[in-house]
Length: 225
Image 1 (cartoon, rainbow, N blue to C red):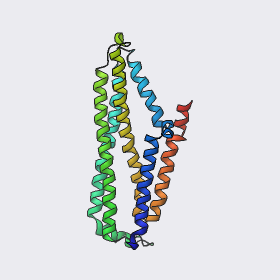
Image 2: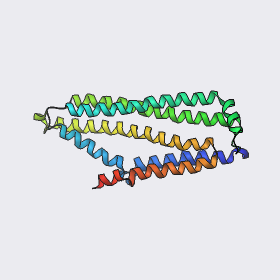
Image 3: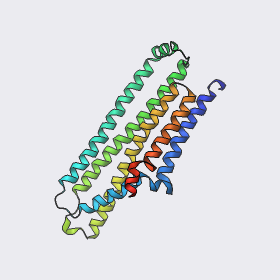
Image 4: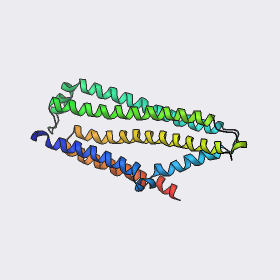
């Protein structure tokens, strides 16, 4: 156990940072000021304004573009899983390459395989998030197709339909954001293949980068205007 203490601490730090960031973004009042939360306001506004339009082809085109982006990320996740499996099967070759580097960073075969399995699990999680987001966006398309006509925009049914569509849309966006967040943390996880100390640094850098994009980026300031 003592030999792998730093590795255990580094992975624990990685999991803790991911969990705390996700919880803060989605479950706390602070997270309500994030870029993602502000964009949800415009999702609902978009759906409400659809009630004023009889021609909704542009709205459906926007939804198709969102679906295509989600499908791209889901496909990329599958490719990443395949890459991780290839890396796992090439343990001996990878360790042979690492042993020839000027700095000895070669882990034991067992530790290398654990690192590969962890990376694969992250991308499996990523795929499930993007695949489910894609499915939810399909449901949103159906709900948009069932939107009441503009002549009924002040009815109780129209209001209820806007609310349910907005909730479905928000859920799809939340799962998409979780998948994208997993991609970012997967990049930080790659630091562990170099050293557990590097994993500490890359994890912290990922948190800083994604926090800045949600709370201090030019896009966030634009939505604050």
